[in-house]
Length: 135
Image 1 (cartoon, rainbow, N blue to C red):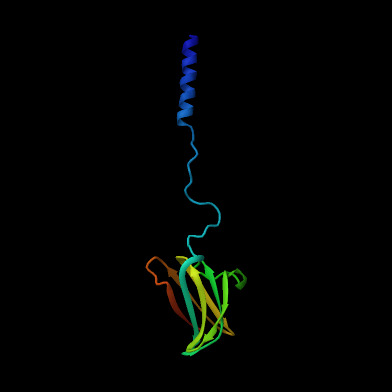
Image 2: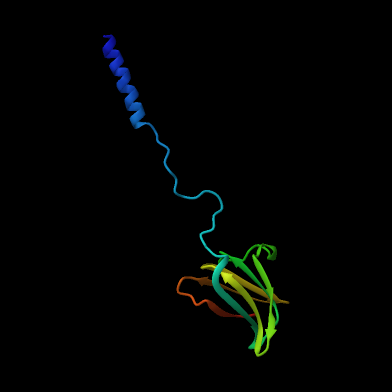
């Protein structure tokens, strides 16, 4: 009888161990993660030309790495460039050494604004020109 009770207890213990809840590995990242890639350290250069109604316009251009939407305020951008003029070329801003990824560009002059999203991948040219027409 003692062996019978021991066997039942052992069987119950094995069943509990075998069929008990198991912690699942959760492949979903926790916290605030960004699905986009981007940033400094690559071989790509983006040149942003700014204008309004077909004419060139000096402005400040803001860049947010790994983003496709506007940050809450201008202090959250990763790079800021004032446009410059070179001989034969209108106002433009250079953003150099960018990695493959998604980038949000924004500029504002007075009441006029413009923005665009550029995605750089392995098929992209090393130098990319983009025009922001302020409205």
